[in-house]
Length: 240
Image 1 (cartoon, rainbow, N blue to C red):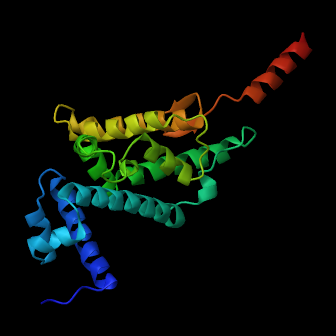
Image 2 (image 1 turned 135 degrees about the horizontal axis):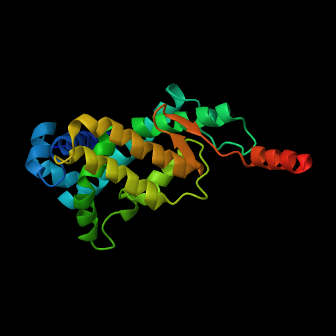
Image 3 (image 1 turned 90 degrees about the vertical axis):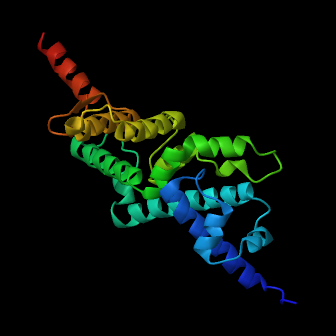
């Protein structure tokens, strides 16, 4: 009779299955992987799979949550290593143009880097299948809050120190899916794809920061300075 596994061993086997499942899901999507695929990749017997997970669906839910958490870990790493959090925090309305421009450009780079994370691409590509998976489960099966939805994108923006009180997470969600669909679409003119991506990303940054104008040719952000207009009006009024 085989000995019972210790809690540490159970956690290790569970972790191995989730890691191998994530690797396969990133390559093939969640619909194209089977229990056999996962156990073979992990070097484990198929029967042992059900010692750790109640069902394939429960396993996929935990795997998806794992991938989601890893996106936030990579986002934090990006902020710590590639950007200064204070550079992309909400700018003051009284800040100088260069300071605001610097913060917006840093936020832009952050979002572009997020989009390039393989696990983020996985969620964008498999969003429909993930939604279908969670919709098929009874309320008692798993935690549906791990599903990638609009709130996740709002949280990723907030993680960078950007004030999200006037931002709709659903709009960020739609933008990210637009980027993915645009890149996956064969009908677009590939020579102009990069410039198209930049234009859409610029419009997203303008939405996030509530600005009104952008110079696409120089990729420099510009603003209508209400304070400056007031002073100019005052000068003109004084000269009459």
